[in-house]
Image 1 (tube, rainbow, N blue to C red):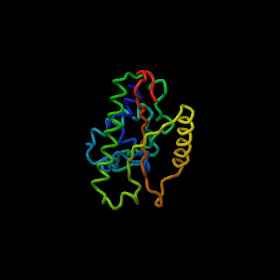
Image 2 (image 1 turned 180 degrees about the horizontal axis):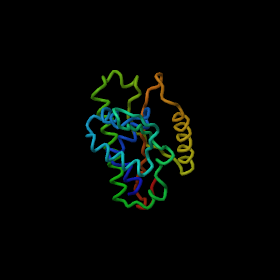
Image 3 (image 1 turned 90 degrees about the horizontal axis):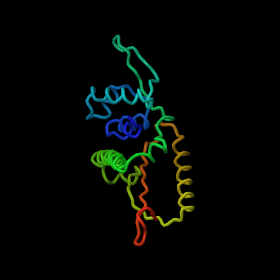
Image 4 (image 1 turned 135 degrees about the horizontal axis):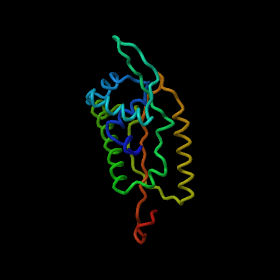
Length: 185
């Protein structure tokens, strides 16, 4: 199975996200956090992620005579290779984008339904749309700047003083009149 198919499945995406945003977790903790994922389903998805080296066992405990595993994300293995993305079909990209968008919709809906609108600004919740008019060189500088800021912020370890905020991004080149389909602006 391709790494993108493994990671961009709605349930597996939620599992990885939980392991990325907090401390390592047991399957029982993940069942409680995710709420709507049956334990048997979670075990199946965890097995796939573990076999693909996308998650790893970081601790084991004996609980009532059985071994309980504590899982964490293998961050160094999460990136989908450029080759895999470049060789994916258009249909696969649509499927990947749909899974990505569905996950964001689920996360946003959950937050919105549990939070008073007066808290949105304080929590940093928002969404926006901003057309950017950039040359290819300006665009590369822009992306490098964003990546540097994100990498710096991602170095922070979770703590009681820090709130976890998910940054989701997408860039969609827009076609303008007179442009060939192969070109984008």
